[in-house]
Amino acid sequence: MTASTIKLETTATDHHLARMAALALGLTVLEAAIPSPLPGVKPGLANIVTLIVLTRYGWRAAAWVSLLRVLAGGLLLGSFLTPGFFLSLSGALCSLAVLAASQHLPQRWFGPVTHSIFGAFAHIAGQLLLVYFWLIPHAGLLYLVPVFAAAALLFGTVNGLIAAHFIASKKLFIHENHERHEKFPA
Amino acid sequence: MTSRLVGLKPNLQHIKSGDWTVLLLATLFTVWLAATVWQGGAADKAVIRSGGKIFSVVPLSRDQIIDVPGPLGISRIAIHKLQARIAADPSPRQYCVRQGWLKQAGEIAVCLPNQVSVELSGGRKRYDSLNY
Image (cartoon, rainbow over all chains, first blue to last red; front, side, top):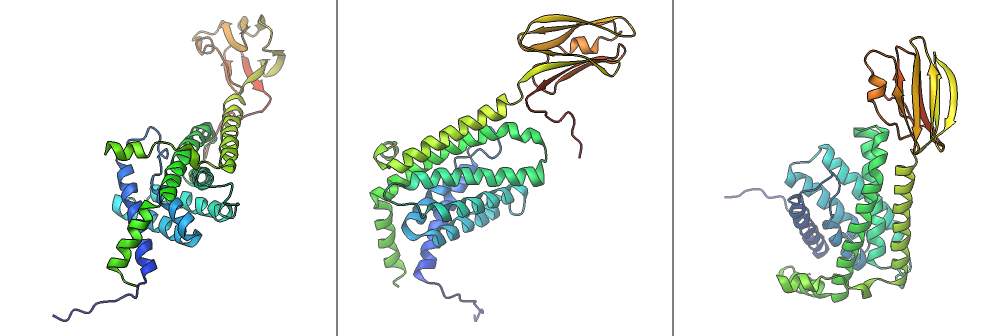
């Protein structure tokens, strides 16, 4: 059978990004099963992967992983093009914009915890702005802002610590690189 | 599984000095946000109207009872512990009395039959109605 196949030229970097996005996607799906008291208050575990990628491979790679995860997460959870999807997207875009700036902070003093906290606050700010200007244009939303900020502080710090733990241990990456070279010899 | 989770326990050595600063600033920001958003509505004055005109503006800091005359008789307004209510009113259905204590700026109790109202106002005037 001579099926015509579309073959995309992919590099080892593409494979690695896809692998990291898939890891983030797994965390997104896992997290969707956790009940949340308030819509929008989620641990954001997938951002641990984004933080690790940011530290190891730079902002472009982190942006790819983050946006791929949002897109694929939307498709997988059936929320693609629903308000929930756009909330994820606006949060991710705001986070990435802030991370683009915060990654230039001197590494000697500022680690993943800083980036995580900045990212978490930017994420919630992006979401709240979208909610206010698109979904619920009601000043009562203001009363929830401190709750979201407290969640961003808590989960931002915890995710940052987890990311810092993995970055420091380097186990994850040695293992991944090893596997990558086995399967996709560059 | 347990050992892996234990391995993930918060390891404070990963927090650098700048991270502590950011953490502190973020905490202060959150506290400030909560203080501003949740306490901003605190009222400090009660505006009492009779027949559409301002009858009196009284501070909530002093506990007192004010009698306000209207077409049906006297409405009695009580101010107690930074709150205000209409304690007695000659209106037939007593809606404004049953409304109870007003606490936040912008809250208002209106006795339409007796044309008396009491409204709390604070440092910041908030919306009194919304439509869109």
